[in-house]
Length: 111
Ligand code: HEC
Image (cartoon, helix red, strand yellow):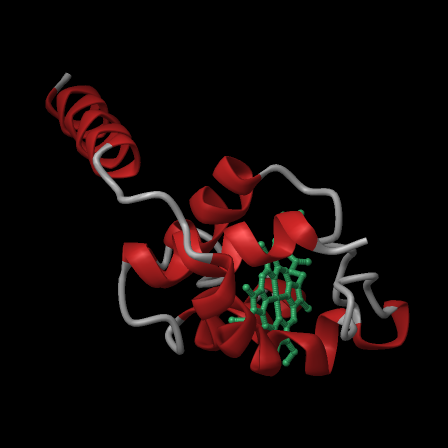
């Protein structure tokens, strides 16, 4: 019960922070994406050899949620999650939720 409450509050807080964010700035996101492209491809097309999936065409809210989960250790923290553990430290290069929104806005422009 207590855990359920905590989870509900966490969901609410993340929902609030997601909606209270300023819209992502794709120009700033482009600079941040330089790191990401090394694994995910310059156009976010994905590179199977590096186990990095396609990001191109992905919805911004989903990208932001995954980045938040990686950074919070919800995703990519279990030693059995080999590929998630490769991505988790990369999420640390994004200083805050605004940076995540910016990079997601840039990903949205990729074709
Ligand atoms: C060292 C290589 C590497 C770098 C650099 C990297 N990633 Fe990843 N990323 C991965 C891997 C591997 C996965 C797959 C994780 C899994 O299988 O759960 C992944 C997964 C993701 C996902 C989840 C995709 C989904 O569909 O759930 C997102 C979003 C993402 N990366 C965004 C980024 C962003 C933004 C950056 C730059 C800040 C970045 N990545 C940099 C390797 C990398």
